[in-house]
Amino acid sequence: MAYVNVKEILLKAKEGNYAVGAFNIVDYSTVRAVIQAAERGNSPVIIQTSVKTVNYYGYTPIVNWVKHLADNAEVPVALHLDHCKDLEVIRRCIEAGWSSVMIDASLSPFEENVRITREVVDMAKKYNVTVEGELGAIVGVEDDIFVDEDESYLADPESCVRYIEATGIDVLAPAIGTAHGLYKKKPNLNFDLLKNIAERTNIPIAIHGGTGLTEEMFKKCIENGACKINISTDLKHVFRTSIEAFYKENPGEYEPLKVLAHMEKGIENLITSYINVFGSAEKTEKGV
Ligand SMILES: [Zn+2]
Image 1 (cartoon, protein in one colour):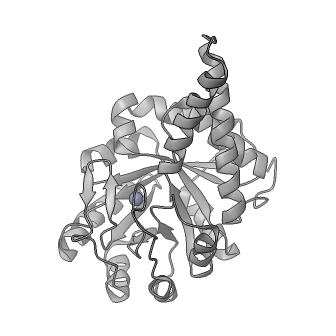
Image 2 (cartoon, helix red, strand yellow):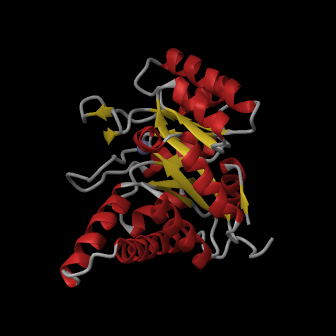
Image 3 (spheres, helix red, strand yellow):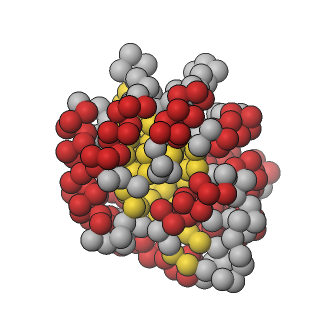
């Protein structure tokens, strides 16, 4: 169908009370698997890249993979840069054709976070690129950003309102108790806080650290105002386990394309299950 802006996808999701998954890909095959799952479910989808992945492949190849597949897909596809604190990387992604970027200055004091985020919004506006900003500090490891439990803190609703007004961001990622990576103990999400933030702000809200949350937690996040949910760790796990399973079952196999196909199938099934939980299936008209 088309390569679209993240904002476009998320405003529809907010209106329709569902969430769209943003899945961190690691290579061309995983991009393909995610888009195939979106097509299977007739769902919009966000392909998400970490800074690490961008540094590994370079800017142009990733945009080319995603745009090529999006142009030939029957669902809307967007490309988003996850947690980035380097303005130069953000500038290069915007110029290369990413449709959305996240500035993570959440560990800076509030005024400094506002100033840096504002700079990214000014940069992105000229290209009609969506900007996601973070408030509060989400616990865990994301790329080279480490936040331990002592450093983590939840977003304050009043600051969220001020942050959005002062920066002009399109999507807010407030820390509400989720964590990056694997949960060491049962996730403790503050749904009242999420609800409070959603009621006082009017832009789409992103939830980070989706891997490890239960179906019930996802549904409560969506009911309380979330419309973008990030999944990274689970995809990496299925990448590994599907390849391991393939070689265990086929020890004599040396054709790489067969293992890639098997891995793609595993990722596609994983993404399909998230699409069904997030409620984004059948939310787009095929062929439009
Ligand atoms: Zn995150």
